[in-house]
Amino acid sequence: MVRSDARAAQPASMADESVGRTLSNYATQTLAVAAAEVEKLRHDPLELFTRAVQPALWLLLFGGVMAQVRGVSPGGLPYLDYLSAGILAQSVLFVAIFYGISAIWERDLGVVQRYLVSPAPRSALVMGKALSAGVRALSQALIVYLLALALGVGINLNPLSILGVVAIIALGSALFSTFSLIIACIVKTRERFMGIGQVLTMPIFFASNAIYPLSLMPAWLRAVSRANPLTYQVDALRALMLVEGASDYGLLLDFGVLLGATAVLTAIAAKMYARMGY
Amino acid sequence: MIDNPVQSPAIDVRNLTRRFGDIIAVDQATLAAEQGEIFGLIGPNGAGKSTLIKMLTTLLPPTSGSATVAGFDIVRRPAEVRRRIGYVPQLLSADGSLTGYENMLLSARLYGVPRAERAHRIARALARMGLSEVADHLVRNYSGGMIRRLEIAQSLLHRPKVLFLDEPTIGLDPGARETVWDHVLDLKASFHTTMIVASHHMDEIEEFCDRIALIDHGRVAAVGTAAELKARVGPNATLDDFFIQLVGSKTETEVERGYGEVRRARRAAREHG
Image (cartoon, rainbow over all chains, first blue to last red; front, top):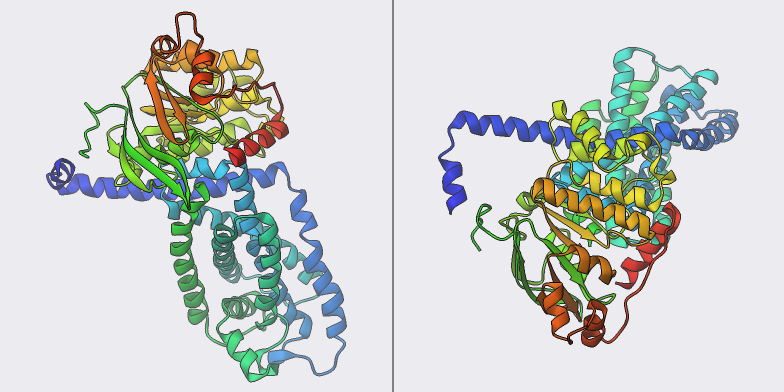
């Protein structure tokens, strides 16, 4: 009516300018949510160290024992090398999958309402949250890298490979944290979420190539694992992180699966996140 | 409704209704607030004040009816509404694990305050609310009154046309309450901001609001100035008398508390109302 007429009458250059401003606002709003997360970690970094315990136990105990078993060298890799990429993916998964808890916590406090009454698009908020999970996950990656180096794993320190690992970790944590956010929007209480989080994490982890190759699995489990995005994340990590690592499915497919799944989940989460304000 | 930001009332609510299953939280509410007005919402716990505010701030879609805020329809143009409003919820909205300044910065970025103006506007808003000294302290160490002032400061960065304050003085001692109100009045005088205030404190509602609506069982039971409402009861009636006569129960009082207690109090208030 009156407004749409006024908009139609705008010269094209002005419309272009406003598209540019909308995009730059969108980026600012997304990054603002992630920046707040970085600041929180800076104020209270203890969590980063306590979270390091779990990957350390997996690598030292589980990896230490399994490395003694003769003939376990999937893809020609020493088992500890093979495992380190899987454990990196695992720590990213564990950080991300419980991210919904913090969303529920923020909802109970009222912080979510502040996000939702702002003009920031819901998808920018969801992506900001996904990036925040990536920030935490990257700190995990640093710890796993240090542990793996100390254990003599053949880590590829080529800057391009490291950049690739960062990208995969960011994507993987965005994927699983957004998934977690969707579940949080559905269950709405921390108690219920804790139960469901446990139930989800284990199948995602074990029905993947994180700690053993798909070739050892019965056919049905192999099919499930092929549909599990974590498998593609681990596959890409093995190729990028290890000197002697190689991808089974091709990095293009790995990135494609992770990107596609993240995009779909972000679209769903953006619709559901609004319900956190009810 | 036609979107017309210039001439329309600050809020214009028509037959707005929200159901939760069988419960009707807001029932055919109709009211309007003029630009620059401080408009009070009173009513017992669970009367529907917060639900009404949540619909007007676009947090909750209405079941039926319509409303415009700052000239824009809340259902058809929620993004335009959000750009023009500030909201200080009953719950704690400042993040305790960030400093006051970081909370402000987050808001400035979410509201698209231009980069070049951010630092200046944040400093001014913090100074206006008397928080400059504690800007770099973590909010979890603030008193209840300081948190409220920070939340108001946050919701002012983008210079809203309409500011919604849901129980702005809940959990504050009388001194802190007075400070909050001083700031609210100052905003009205400086920027002609329209304010919609829900409160249980009859004394402050009477003292500071231009007009008042009594909400009971989700309905707008009465609208008018404090004098008009009191006159309905009798010559020497107080606003409390009016409230008790229409609703049949007394209002409550609050005492000053810290972050943890304010959090619990506001959570409890939300769960019960």
